[in-house]
Image (cartoon, rainbow, N blue to C red):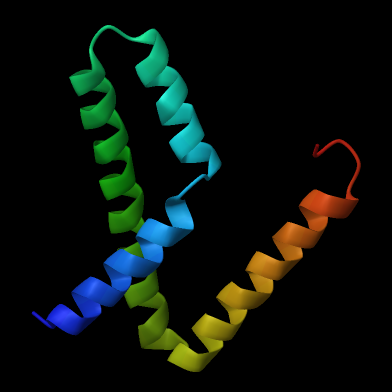
Length: 92
């Protein structure tokens, strides 16, 4: 296992997740639940599940599409969705 990839992935995902709506939803669940362990287990399992799905899709895409195109497509999709959230009415 390449520890450089592990640590760089951890750092980027950790920073990207800080303050996002998933973290805020988990905060709300923890605030209203008596079982914070259950909230932790549920949110951790959800993050692991979505990460697994993303890794599998990324690995599959990289077999049929060059990696540079996958990165560019992800970046373009990120920008398009951000602009859509800002400018399309009803998204606020």
